[in-house]
Length: 281
Image (tube, rainbow, N blue to C red):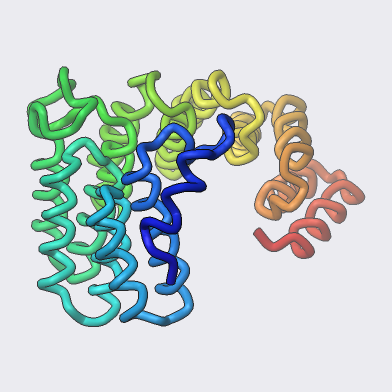
């Protein structure tokens, strides 16, 4: 299994466009060990994967290696070890939102709902998250990915209103990763659809589309909201765009078919149902 030294020389000579070229030789080697650990873990070679993750941490990989290693220990039934690794990763990189999301999901899988919520609250304390420099509430940071993860947790716990607040705050940040904001707008729009708040749902989906105009899930959501508002021509165009962007989006095909069936457009409905059944996504 290659040594750090063996990987050091080529990394230092990497082409400028290589993603690893911006990393120091030490952290680049750490990321390579982390990838090796993930592959070995997927292959079921837990001892070899554990050794690779350990090397990744020694070579400066940080939070991603701790997350992978912790998930491995969870799979092996070493829950105490897994919890300790999540905590070590958070101490090392407190700004790493995916680590906090993974840590909370680990607690949730163990049935510790209060513990999961406490992880989110702790991560959102002032200065705990790199983006948490100003606040929208006593326990909420301005870290979109973290707020979105927290909202998903509250939704699974049955607190949909709480989830909607978190999704909206995540979405309205309007900064950082566009994908994070798009996912938050989509999550908020989906909640509003279930609440039958069609106008609010449409607003959420359209806000998401302003930043991610080619997102098939957002186009589908906007189409569903328009159809619910009896705005059938705009809905039809949104469904058409959704399947044009992602032809394998079975849910979009089926939603289009349902609307056309209700309007008596038999041929278009048949096509939507047929494509939806074939695509199955």
